[in-house]
Every structure is written in structure tokens, then in C-alpha cells.
Picture (cartoon, rainbow, N blue to C red):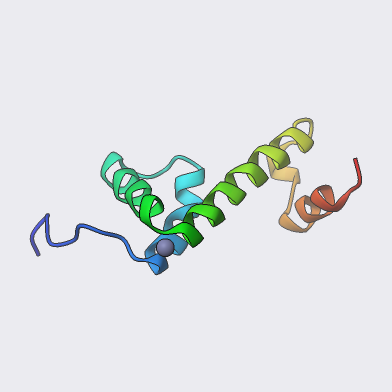
Length: 83
Ligand SMILES: [Zn+2]
């Protein structure tokens, strides 16, 4: 396996990695490839910008709730809660 054998991510890989991307856990190389994919793939671009906005929204809504006490179903409730 050569380091340059893989130059582009496909949509499945974006799907696998977006959570880490949003959490800023990708390596510089992964991040570069990820962002490169978003530049030519509109569906992924839309999905990721939605996820990023959602994360910001959750963080603003959940700012006072300790993360360890915020299971996913509660996050859904927070999102659906009328403001
Ligand atoms: Zn894609």
C-alpha cells in the first residue's frame, strides 16, 4: 500500500468520517481530503453544513447541561423543543 494510492474520498467515507470531522478529530491529511470532497460533491457539502449548524445549535441549547448527562434522546428533545 503506497501513501498516495488514495487521493479522494467517496461519499461512503465522508459518511464514516463526518462525525470526526465535526468534532475536529481528523488528521490534517484526512481533513484536506474531506474538504476536497465537499468542494465537488454538493449532497455531502449540504449534509456537512447542516451537521455543523446542528452542532452549533445543540451546543448553544445544551450549554448548561453537562455532556455526560446528555444522552442522544435528550438532544433530540432539545432540538425539537420550541424556543
Ligand atoms: Zn459525496
